[in-house]
Image (cartoon, rainbow, N blue to C red):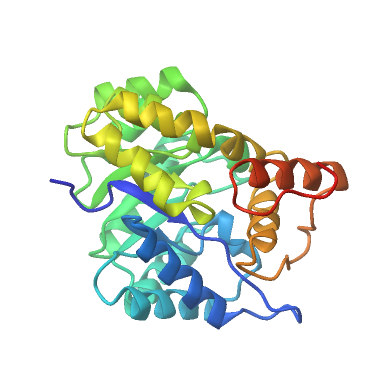
Length: 300
């Protein structure tokens, strides 16, 4: 039986109107599509959701809409991380009031805290809220890595229940799965590494690709959960080009361009993010066409 915060959690993009405002109708529509597609939890207001450009009011409204749409069927793991521990604690309180049932908290960025600083940061957040917390380790974005020893230490804090491991360091991922307690949830933070992670004890993924293909990602992860890795590999092989092209430029540029081509949202970003280069867009469209997610481009 699956426990909460395992399986596929979608790192939701944030849709904007052509005028640049939060597109509340699209948030609702995309949330419903994810739930109907069988994903196991939703992860709004993370870096895939362009959260540094969102106001507090916008973040809270996104969570409120998704809570309404989920109506208890699908838990909401809201993004609540940042540079300033006091600010993160306040954000955690606000997300709790908005109805989030868990928090994904990225490591402080730019200031590069020591392992002791990371431990103190997360412990302070955990002591301020009853919500379960999943640590988000993405050193390529933040400049700091949560090493295995620090993560094992954090696993001893009551409501720090897991990690989204996006270091891209496969030996570190394997060591984490070996060293943390059995009930500590290890999630892949990279779509392409989901199956390797689950093969050594991981419990799923916080996914970008499930924005585009929620049902297929759920199918792959559920097969791995059943230890049917032959079936999981078959899905993985088919969708691997999408997983790769989603990072042909900085996330979330390719996935939002793809979703716009699929008719799911307006292709609007907030600066400093801009649309993909023409050559990248061509590759994105070819992959979508190969997967029959859009009609074949005329130039292909």
